[in-house]
Length: 210
Image (cartoon, rainbow, N blue to C red; front, side, top):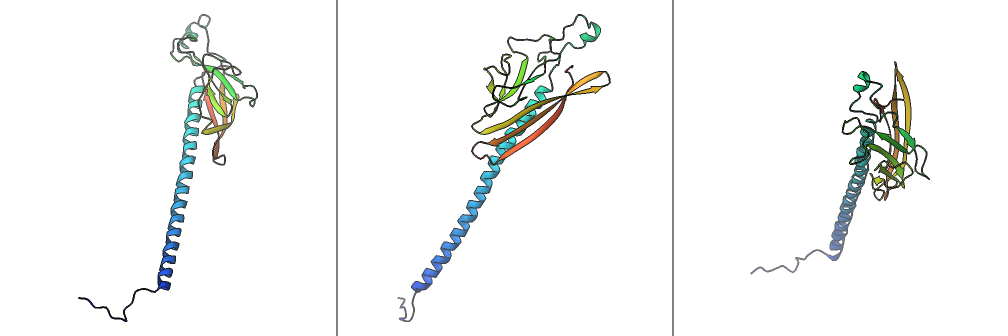
């Protein structure tokens, strides 16, 4: 049987209090460090979400608008220029929805099915994009810039687009007059307006005739 000496004793109350204080301080510092790390991760996630949507939408607009004026039967315009119609020529138009900034809407057409005809049924080949109520909308059924019936391309409850501006620059190359498009876009996260991004894109529309 183990007999404890009367001189043996445990930790004093003061020692226990000091140990507890040190432990609490360590836990507080560790929690603060974890909280900072989580905050950084959350900011990175929200910023990444804005960057991803911004990039995808910008590239979509550029690729789609660059097709303006394409005609699948364009080669026949050389052999029979007086016979073949040019339904997609001069289709680029810039406007705006009421109460939005000028040049925040663009309309255009191209021959998606390459049949040489501007189809308006079963896949309308009149396209466009516009700014309305902090969202980029996509044209449907050949609607005009000031008409209803457009569909949201971006979700204004997540990303607010505060600026969408289209500029058309004619460029003369020899006997050809090409069109360069400039798109300026500014957007931010709705719940964190300080997380924002802006970009200006330039690209050529080779099939558009002035």
